[in-house]
Image 1 (cartoon, rainbow, N blue to C red):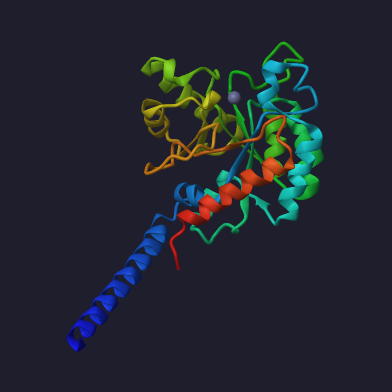
Image 2: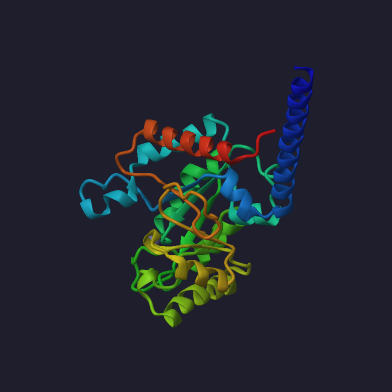
Length: 279
Ligand SMILES: [Zn+2]
């Protein structure tokens, strides 16, 4: 018994040490990666919006891209009341974020497609709450004529960035990337990045795939064009694969009440916590 006990004690100690070592190693590797691309996949939910308004029912084809004004305000209030702080991709990347370098309850609020009305919305609803947004624009549409096309201008975007918001890429033409021949796919990735960099005077690190449609070839093209992060338009779990070029976003729908929103945020937080190494 003594021997057996001694042996099981040793085994226990070996196991305890192995557990300790693997915890330290996983913490070290997290620290070593120290890039926002890995930290983002671990610690920051990304919300996706297009339009905010009360016309979702009257234009059924748009309903999944619109959030009611009242609901949007309730969602922003919920984030504030629950201690969330908005960050941007560049803030995160520039800080070379380790898991510790962004506050535990950080969130990215993204707006797609570069609609002019998004500027007023951000001014009215985000800025008074001390929040910032990230705009994904497709460069063929920015400042597009004729007038009243509804698209935001480079000047508006520059003013938004000077107030702490951020502009990233949604390609050139907003086409289905998976259907494009290689040369066109490459152009969509590279030209949009170069145009935004020229107009906004900073590097562009993130691309949101139009309609959230992507495949392995699209992810490779994003990487080859110099992006560090590629974004989807859904939050389905992807198990066992790196998230860097398939980063999930939480899509908020027209009929989602605050309960659905809160549930999506809580689920996202619990997934994030589940991925963190145990201490
Ligand atoms: Zn879009």
